[in-house]
Image (cartoon, rainbow, N blue to C red; front, side, top):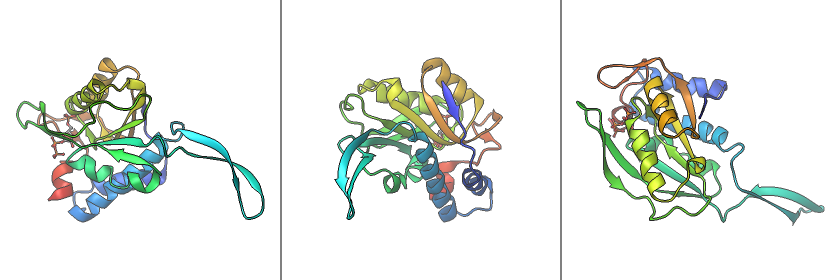
Length: 211
Ligand code: PRP
């Protein structure tokens, strides 16, 4: 189990914009997108399928390493706010496919339910999957999402989770259920309150993104 909070001032900056209660909806959404782009950059650093080949530059032959476009990275955004966090993934990854998962947490029980599942019947063998969810609070949503992805043939080693803020209960749950999984997050916070919000966190990411 690996939790990575990449040390980069831009990552801290976008987290600070998200935490600020005075950040308006459009700026919140775009900060999520920027943070997602940086976290995806870090999460794919040692994890992208590359091909080595020769190409002709205007001056000579060069041996180059480039991203294999035959193996798109699978993006699984968890609606709603995962959409904003995954928004710029396609601008840094040369080849992607997106499969939406709509999940909502009950305000009282804090249990997640699935209202949209656009996952493929079967993920291609060996593909790379980024599960994108801004908040890992109690961990119910992310755990259920990983289960759904696994049901469609993925192994834990093929999945990385991207989140804006993560809290101990979620990390504990993910570690217990999926010991090999990797989480890339913008920040780790101390607690989750009785309403299921991360403290200090950034509020309700879905509401703040979409008003
Ligand atoms: C929030 C958040 C996560 C989930 C985290 O979504 O975006 O998906 O709760 O909570 P958990 O770790 O305790 O399961 P919410 O259900 O509010 O939906 P929304 O994104 O549509 O607002």
